[in-house]
Length: 113
Length: 97
Image (tube, rainbow over all chains, first blue to last red; front, side):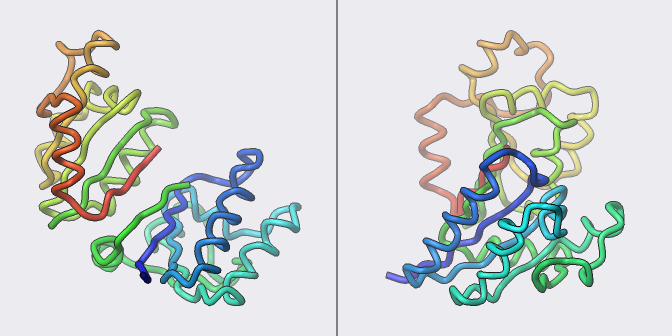
């Protein structure tokens, strides 16, 4: 059964192994042909910036290979954090709040980080 | 059927609840559990709850354990059984920590 599964990333990186574990979870879920999308909200938007850990950026760049093309970031999270999508390690579509509400409402499962 | 948001943390200035509130829709429900119940006892909570447009719940055992029943704002205190009912009555379930 294919289900719609949304991963919501709300924490900044550098929390030890957690980012890597989330990426594993995400890629494994996608490998089982579930309909996976990812949403970065609040401080989670910092995850999209390439730091000095090449592993995380590599992991996120692998998403399209696993047919994860729906990558979103909360639009309101960008400006207060001086973030611009051009600097992100992967393409993330900025979403306004009403669109985020619709996205969440359409899911079967929502997985937090 | 609206979403059920579970807020389980009050750290980082209540970041979990703030993230949740920005994306919660009218008709959703929010349940405070664990240290998340502290979010319902802050000075600004009454104002937040009033304009949120969602239904508010908190786990009674977690409130009593932390001794903040008197400080708690306008939430419905629920036991584990009622929590289960909420989970079965909403979709999706969204956890924030």
